[in-house]
Length: 361
Image (tube, rainbow, N blue to C red; front, side):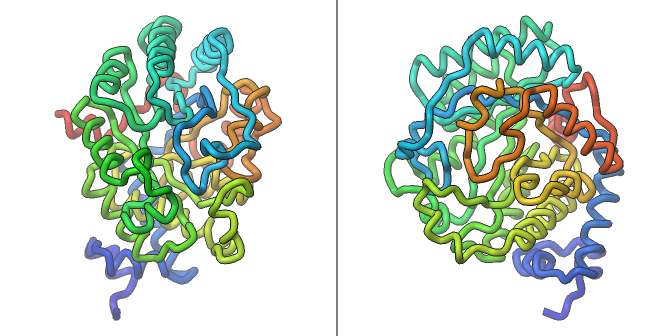
């Protein structure tokens, strides 16, 4: 292809071929991409970074994803469930710290007890936050009835990562059984939209077997799905998973970081007013990773307010940062990162997706 990065950006000529060209941009060309993304971010969503206090409710999971440290078959994973009292304390901390929003994340379960537990947490979040605390759920595939109930109880956002929009690659990183179905995942994303959520998804970047063409297709998938928010980051291996055997075939750490930053920047250029998270996985590979993501398009960060007692056990991948921290440490560290990135913290506001709000007008 003869097109330059500058001409693609100027003409807004985005298709799979041109996106691959941008993903393969050299150092000088990448500066153009990052500069364009930063400019769009400033124009469309501003300089504020919205905080979502992250509560990792439980690492008990019915899924057996081949990349994940809390997969059902990992017998080395010490399972836990955060208590009601600890949940209430974490919610109160988020309110007192003026975070504006919560994220409730867990392993995927569809049991009646789990669904009722989330119901109760949403009720308490509404009471403690006096209806002013935004709540994002990341609790996997559920029925329409469950999604509607959680929406009714106050959850306004839902993150359900596709991990790869390429069905063939999806089945290389998930078992092919009735609990891991590509179409079911897609249907769940459609269900969430129809239930009125601000819908988010995301992918892993630098997976074994993944090509640049896959990542370009992931960007187009998110654009065409018309998502409201995104959480994506580099693939990081975990020794207690089947995919660990391919660790020597992975892109280098620096390549995975750079590719992740390009994906964030390109998504900001493609979907200018959505919310994009600067994810923990970036910091796991590079202490500057989350700050760099803010500079090239991300506008959301998630300080971990899970009790420190449990953090070592919610290990989706190796070397997850913040394992030895408490909520106060996580918040202070993120505040410093936001400042160092030249941004400001959006205290006391939900930080809803501009894209979602504009679509609803």
